Amino acid sequence: ESAERLVDKALSMMKQSKVTSILLLPLGGCLCFTRAHPALPIPTTARPPKESRFERNEGPYSADVTVDGTVPATKHRRHGSPFRTISRRLAVARDPDDGKRPPSQVESLVANAKDIFNFGRNMKMSNQKYLTAITAGLAVSLAMVPEAVSFSFVAGVSPLVGLWTTVVLGFFAAAFGGRAGICSSASGACSVVVAALCSSHGPGYLAGCAALTGLLQIGAGAFGLGKMIRLVPHPVMLGFVNGLACVMLKAQLTHFQDAGKFLSLFAPEGLATYGCAILTMALVKFGIPLFQEKVDAARAVPPTLGGVVIASVVAKVFKWPLKTLADVAGAETFKGGLAVLPKLGLPTSVWAPLVSSPIETLKVILPYAVTMCAVGSIESLLTLQLLDGIIDDGERGSTKKEVIGQGIGNLAAGLTGGIGGCALIGQSLINAQSGGGVSRLSGMSMAIFLALGIVSFAPLLGQIPVVALAGVMLLVCQSTFAWGSLRLVGKIPNIDLLTIALVSFVTVKDDLAKAVVYGTIMSALSFAYKQSTAISATIGRTKLIPPSGPILPDVKAYLMNGPLFFGSTQAFARLFSVKDDGNDIVIDFSSSRVFDHSA
Image (tube, rainbow, N blue to C red; front, side, top):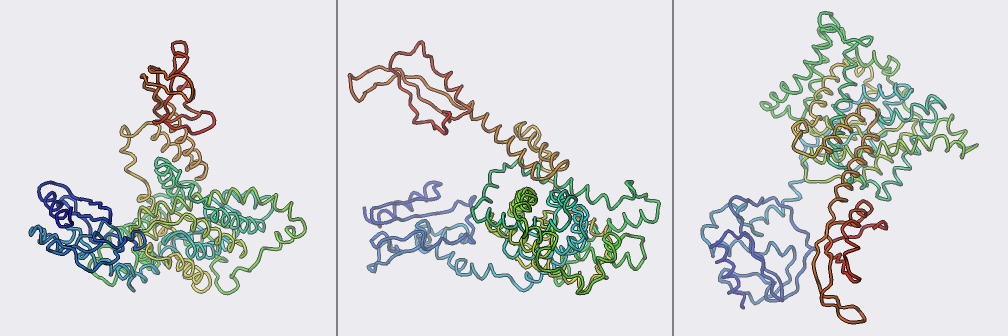
């Protein structure tokens, strides 16, 4: 039929029914008419198709259709997706009511043209967003200090080592990582791994271990091993975030204790400690956001940064008896000056034995490096997945780049005498909630501000109360915990509930890497068991035409359904009645799959 008649029929069908899309496929090309139902709005900010994805040959069906339904004489090549080819002028001519619809109700290449051409400009960040990213990095740099100091104590090294590890690792991991918003530092998971190495061979070996870990991560990222994180099931992710929230809560509660007991509310120290934490949480959660709604200029300052600064000033003015960062890490850590800068190169304590006996030295540090590579990569990739779901920027992080970025950061940290680390979920969440997920500048500025604080503003930085930062982390714990998982009881399979509980428990009791491995194994075994019971057979009769010999008109046939693998071989064998079957049978695998050698 002619193009005009095809168009008339298509528009008539769209008027008389609830059909939302009609696809006409003649030999010479493709026409697609789409009319959105009012209940199914089509956003005008849809991602434009790539021009190279569809390219049509010249022909009568590749040309634009005019209002009167005729094909213009000039033929031309059409680019873009064939599912966006109807002009809004044609829709208005055929159905005047559609002309009153907003562009989101009528799919139109013309109506979407402005959005397509403005796509790049809309994605460009304004100066305010750049400023927000930088100030978010400043806020995170303050929250990094107590974590880096405490992880240094776990690893058995000076607090300066942990702080400079955060600077070097945080900068390079943010610059080369998988997405914006991730903040890396010396971490508890990695510090626990290398603590035994430090106690047995000294802190010098930690730098060599961090450098080797970086090389292993760069190799793992180059071979694309980071994509294996997609095998982690959703119940494992829920258990991971719940366990992580408990671990962070447990770590912050130590700031409210003295000699293993919680401070008394009736003591001056206890009243000041609890009051400062509550003041910080109230400012971050309510006070500063309400102020930012009334004053536009204040929106560039993250609530976390403003809350910590205001709480610190109040504590200083009223002379509250609080522990500061200098009290926790020592005055030597915050003395400042160029003398605290790290030295480039591996320490002599590990470089000398590495040159003299490289095989023996590698035998010592390689097991720790492999473990730290696995632990750091898993935690960083889980952080990447978590931020992908939190930061709504339409982008997905690259697992390959994230592992390589962590490797570059650990290699640089090792070459500056650091202990290595990985992405920190708590600080990354602070960064995302402060607006730092829009640019890599947030992670890089975090490292720069922390370095400037250590060198130039160390005495001022050391006066920040620890409980002010603990108040911010308590809010992070509250937002990290998946409260919706508590409503899943009775709504999801029991094995998934058990997986969530197991991963949470192992995360709190042991470490993150083991928890993820245990949860993934449990989910995999549960899936294999369910699939092993899914195989079945339908018995019927069929005609068998063998390659040679007579035709058998009536032969027993088994039509298999479900997967055949190592877990279903016994169930498969029980489907047959060997004694009752004849000499000739048919086993039809057209609806089944054979997966492994056991089958």
